[in-house]
Structure formats: C-alpha cells, structure tokens
Image 1 (cartoon, helix red, strand yellow):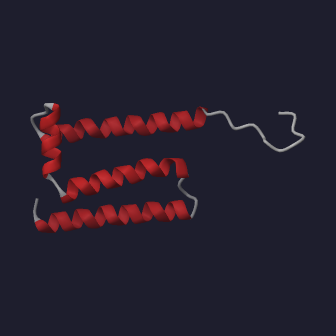
Image 2: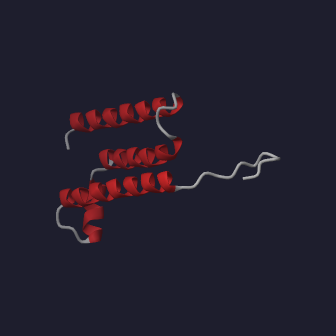
Image 3: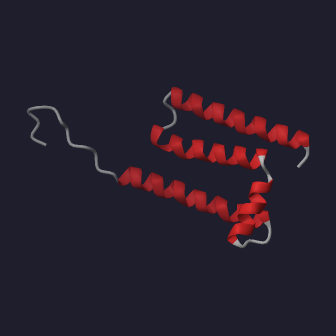
Length: 103
C-alpha cells in the first residue's frame, strides 16, 4: 500500500467517524447502533494503519488470500448488524415505573 493511499484511507475513515459522531450528536443515529459503527471504524483504522494485520488474521484462520478474509468478514458484520436491529425491534418496552400506573 502506497503512502498516498494510506493517507487517503485514514482521512476517509476519520471523516466517516466524524460524520457518525455528528449524527449521534444531532440524534439522527440511534445510540444503540452507534457502538457497532464505532467498532467498525476502529477495525478499519487498524487495517489501514497496519495492513499486515489483515494478512496475519487470514493466515491465522487458514485463509490463503487476505482479500478472501475481508470478503468473509463483510457479510458476517452485515449479519451482526441485522441481528442487532432485529433484536432492537423485537425488544419489549420497559414497564412504566411511575407511581399509580396499573401497567
């Protein structure tokens, strides 16, 4: 990876993270989803700053090419996001703790 490409990717991840924080601040992004996006941004930043990490992780799992490891990781993360959203939609609201409520 060239130095220019690495700088560009660091800037893109930083701008995306900044945009996500702004969306949380403006309450346009649900706080429960924000943790997953922050984790994704941190993982991407590690992969950009230390590109050999992808090759090491792929070799540790037994995948020959690092790109195949990334192609396996992306749908897995998408499934994790879908499961999180499904669980949030299905969660029952907490009962009203105010006095005098019959529930």
